[in-house]
Image 1 (cartoon, rainbow, N blue to C red):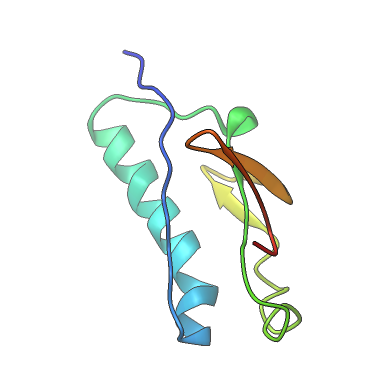
Image 2: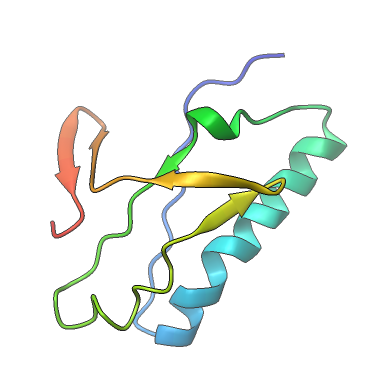
Amino acid sequence: MYAGDTEITISSNNQAEIMQTPQVELLNIAEWMKINILSLNAAKTEYIKIDNTRRRKKTESLSKLYINREKIERVDKKKYVGVMVDDTL
């Protein structure tokens, strides 16, 4: 079975939530895919972390995300709905 591109957006003003939520959601997605006999190609998966410059240093530890023990590549710009977006917006 093939599924097209999927975008997941996580937003919060709570620093602790922003640090934990992405990895928790990736675990939930991996479990859902396993249950539904789907697979995710981690090599084609990437993420972008957009924040303001005041918080940039505080959230820098959110630099590694994994799905099924495979590291997901972090990018500093990404095409989203036909618009190029960078990590400083």
